[in-house]
Length: 138
Image 1 (tube, rainbow, N blue to C red):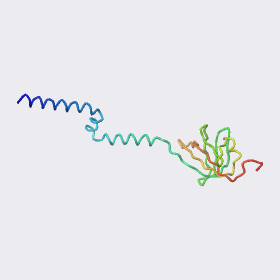
Image 2 (image 1 turned 180 degrees about the vertical axis):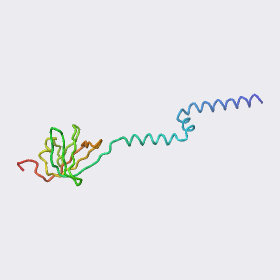
Image 3 (image 1 turned 135 degrees about the vertical axis):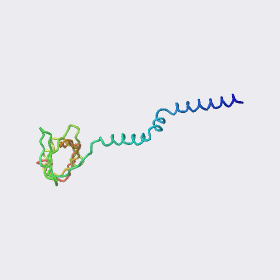
Image 4 (image 1 turned 90 degrees about the vertical axis):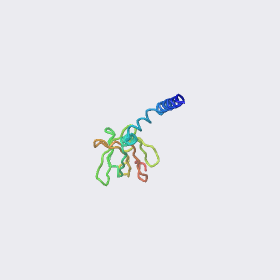
């Protein structure tokens, strides 16, 4: 009888060790580190925080410098300058336009979506409101 009890307890010990091995390092780290779940949340939060925030400005187009790819708007904060990139999306009402077309749209209302880094405002998109003249023929 003593041998049966000894074998049963030895078998249970083997199963307990095997169960821990199959649970993997995640179960072990969670049980040994009480802040493991909190650490995972903070890492996930940091990746979201690193994405740039898109800002918006609305105002009248003052000028566009095609050489510098620089757009100037007159907003409620005064004149603001924005830099276009090759990936910037440009629209006049519902039509896509080229950057050079912005020079002919002075005085028109526009909404600029941009990212700001180190004082540089890099344009994601420009939407010019309809209703104004777009060429000398109009």
